[in-house]
Image (tube, rainbow, N blue to C red; front, side, top):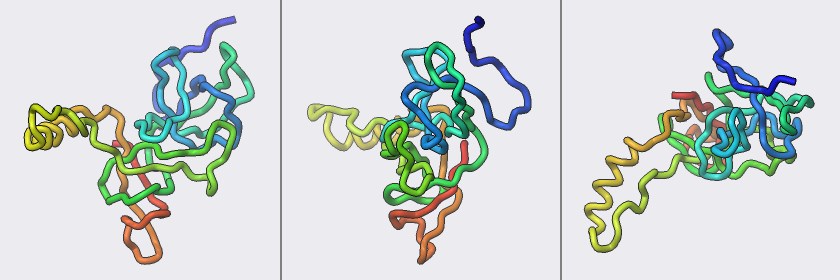
Amino acid sequence: MAKFRLLPTVNVDGYFTAKIVGNVTDADVGKPVRLTTTSPDTYQLAADGEGIDAFVVGIDPATSDGLHLCTLNCSGRVRCEADGALTIGGLVEAAANGAAGTANTNGLPLVSAKTAVAANLADAANGAAIAVAVNAVLAEALLPIINWRVVSGTTSDGDVADEDTYVVIERV
């Protein structure tokens, strides 16, 4: 039997099929995922603080190499729940979503504000002022290629910075 491999596709509007690690079920639909660094053609649920490559759209009962196949969405806009304060235009990363096989409370993926990439670059000998200046430059330069940003948010008072906010994010 032929092995599953990711192949180039044309005009699929950001949806594709991939292998996924873990005991995933339909409860994991909507959660953010990350490409694994240990297994080719394979994704895993994104951990708290990790970048987001795509979102799970469906889990297939079929397997390849002992892993489930899933449909992922890596484009467009996605409705999420904010974990902490977010700003319009701000970048997001995965927050603490439920474990594999466990649905998030409201069924939406949880996202939080993207943390600085180079938060503690300089040691004490270099001084805090240099660290702050270098961190500001590197934080932009070292961002992953795939990013998602907040484009809309709603709360009872219209302030997207409130916690427990529903937001719409888009890939940039």
